[in-house]
Length: 340
Ligand code: FPP
Ligand code: MG
Image (cartoon, helix red, strand yellow):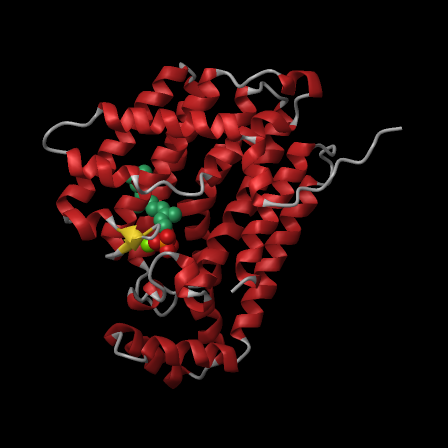
């Protein structure tokens, strides 16, 4: 009789499962950055090295690689291209955040000053492309054109998502459908590729690749929905970046779209002009209004819908330590809204 695989109980356990690979990813990223160091970029490189994050996307790639392999295959160590591609994905993500902080005028990132806040926009834009070029170098080293194709599509969509989002700033007619399309493009598509790259390297079946891509879609949307929810309702300290950025930018994320549905046209106009002036107390007033009108709860229900949809996609996958790790990661993402 098969024994039931134990559930994963902590984030530490998840990281320890991939300890060697995540260490290899971090080492490769640090080495790649340090190799680029010279007299004129020394401070910038040092700052980038302090910006390491939770490595969510590399973990997805490492998980996708292991999820469908059998126990004896999983005893073998990871191939070099898996480390290279996981590192490349983290570099793409970092590059996109450096650019995103220029676009959003974000001052803090991962508990540090953002690159633009410390070095100015011109350097931040340049160093973002620099990081992106480093990721291309690592993808090239894998010699896998299909991975290059997948990631190039992801980056293309991320740019389109940012452009859609810029076009819709302050736009009164933004729909939930439009918003979800932005979320897919700017966030979920890279999640999909992170899974796809790991699965392709494990040479699993096409249907398994497709399943993971679909799952990546739901997990990515779930991630961005919780991010946008926390920008409104989250705890400033836990966030490690400023709250209310979307309000300040006139970016109508899910909480604002739901709020607009609850108020009359005059109130909607007042809220939008409050957002434009971004005066003191305006953000807090809009948050209070959302709480009073049940918007917070409605967002939570909406987010849980994506949570359930993602879970149901994993149902046919046989139980294993790696499946439990994925379930834990998903729960961890959702719990960010419960743990405020
Ligand atoms: C964070 O969004 C930003 C993204 C998810 C993607 C940004 C993408 C680009 C700038 C285009 C791609 C660029 C490169 C160099 C690959 P957010 O502002 O909602 O999140 P935040 O609250 O963390 O700032
Ligand atoms: Mg931002």
